[in-house]
Image (cartoon, rainbow, N blue to C red; front, side):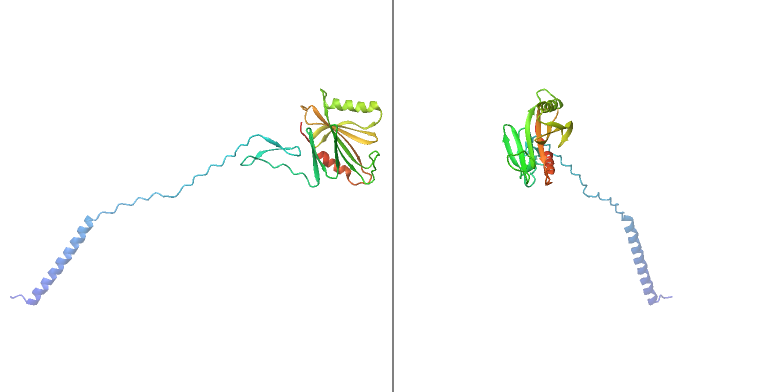
Length: 240
């Protein structure tokens, strides 16, 4: 029996298709065998910046020096440049007395006199007349006294005794201890040609210098002399 030409051609085509499929499957299989998995990538270390704390600035130590101000107070060095602090400014309408032993501020309406080691402040009231005892106004005197081996109490007792022995005045407020702007003071009050209060003030127990303050305040017109005197005493600075 003879092969038909159409059948022969069809078989040839089917054979070619089978061969192509087999070739393709083989190539695919061989490709998978040769393929290697890519190595796993390791995480890259973070490059985040780590902040380093700034060390605190160390304060500069200033030298222990002091500058004496016009009012007798002292100021030290301060600040980053160790400059002297500013001196306190006097209050408006005030002046200052600046002596070796003390300093004090007073209203500019007062008169100042410095004679024979005694510094005095005075102010007249509206009714005060010249060449008479003080009966309207303020009189304050400042004088340095030496202890000469005595205590403050012993010195004051001797002064009170002198007043009593002279008989020209009487002690109307007995000797007692008080404070004047924080300083320890002994005080008494006498009556003679007016009433005078005495304060003897020592800076500390090591000091041999004492400030003797005698004051008289007469204010019949109630103009406020006592308040002015208290402000003056509150400004007192002892230097030695």
